Length: 119
Image (tube, rainbow, N blue to C red; front, side, top):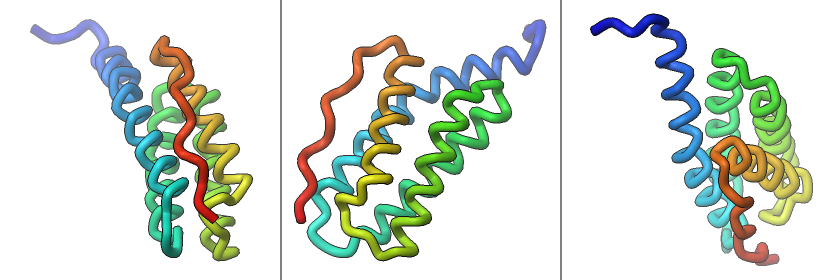
């Protein structure tokens, strides 16, 4: 059986994928918050994640998610370039914003914030 509109099916899969993306984002936030060493690899993981979400959101017509993911991507790039610590305010703020947005899209309450960053 062929779906009426394959794009609608793909768009539905994108929104379903956002559930696992929310979990992945929370894991990345917790990893950053508890990093004992140089957070550069975590900033890179966050950048790649945000870039992927941004691209998919642009493709599937979710400009609000696209914008918030772009902000996170740019914050991770800036933090990595500046050799920022794991409590970089721009990254933490952008992580929180994307977490809230994905939770809202998934119809969930906003999850509990990750552990307090170690300094």
